Length: 613
Image 1 (tube, rainbow, N blue to C red):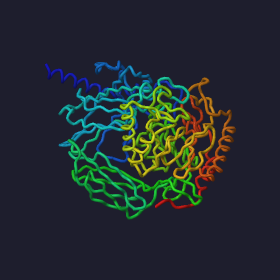
Image 2 (cartoon, rainbow, N blue to C red):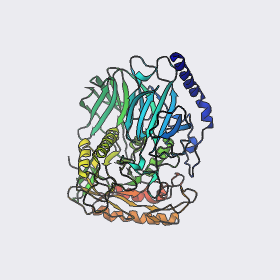
Image 3 (cartoon, helix red, strand yellow):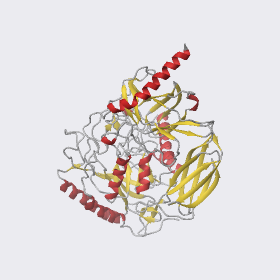
Image 4 (cartoon, rainbow, N blue to C red):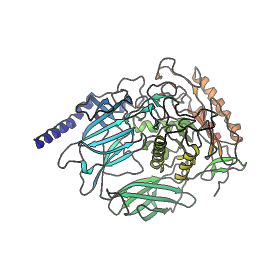
């Protein structure tokens, strides 16, 4: 009887897999107020098809994006026998592009299921990768739990080799997800169960690419690359696994620049090594030079990566002001607050072209940076910032309850007090964020806290980040209650601009200002009075005049020591209408040739100088 039962289940799995093309023909986005120019380009057989991890690339992989089964049930329910319908992975279930657009409450659990064809491997391993799942996930292969993960913003991997069935054409993959959204203290950024104002639609479940890879018995698990511009080398650490734990296999690394070999290294996995370069061409927003890196283990595993050579530091210019020095030159940094939300995919960009559009638009406006605001992006976003040349201040998604529960109010002398388990979870997720994005050339600073949102153990957390990554800047709380530590002292002023007086050992920056709004009929998420900006205008001409006036007011502040300014914001987001673009990205409200020259003038206004050696 057991043999017949297994055969029947395998037959059901095979039938489901065969049925996917016909299901795809019936799929369509759920109704939504807004679409983007890329909404119609998404289909079940063409969902974010590019390799999702550009700094650790293998040839043998299979993309599992597409139609999966889903169901929503009680939080404490067991694995369901029947599923409610189909969802397009990796778009969150609340999004239009998921094809579902349903909320999931903290009292519920979201289940996914699909069949997949396992890759063939001999004496090796099959790895199952998730780019991100919000928030707590457990993964099952053929009914066997292969692992659990907590954290909505970091990738994770399970070795599923032992759970696969031999000589079975289709295997079952199921994922269980629970997300507390704004009812707990886990990092969640601006997600809320009741969207309004600056709080947006919740994101639950799988929201980045899912894929499998085959690897040999000993394989690369991570590569850490730290540029040493002054030393004309990169610090390189390759870690590997044997499936039973860390291994110490030998490896060879080769760096090339535009196809020409410029450095080689033979080293041992698990040890810090240095790769000297014959040619050093610094990375900057104007010249985003990237090196290719090939790494081969003796076991036969081979991965491709890349890196850029740049140095970021706080140093004094010729006038004695602390500036942000890039490659030993003071550069005024100006760019937008970038929230990374989409009306069709919410957290998930609809296509790779959509990612590029946002970055290219900001470049055309004359910006040289952005502040990625309380959100983490898919890895390909950072790849395009590296490749196209746009510096990033990377926020940690805020942890707080409700709208501002566990937040520090303005002028409060004390931090919020997190329960020990929640403080430990925050540190774990922050550590994972830094580890997973550490190789990103364009990230030049970390922002652990925004304003008072979930601000706890402030200086302990900031020092922890600085110790983990001394090669980058660490911003003290961006806005509100500064505790005296960090490379930057950061003011928020709306509409502004403004700045804190300069201090001896930190750079004075303006982490948020502007917020000038223009609601554009036909491009609004909501059509009622919930749309707002810090200041609202009625025409493009009036908005342009106000924006130009705000930028002009930055010039005297720069002369007084202001080192950077962040304008709110890249695009409208749900009810916020203070974007440089509409939420659907179909209209840029401020034409580039009207403002790009002003931005470039500010960037280039600082006198040449030399940073600390």
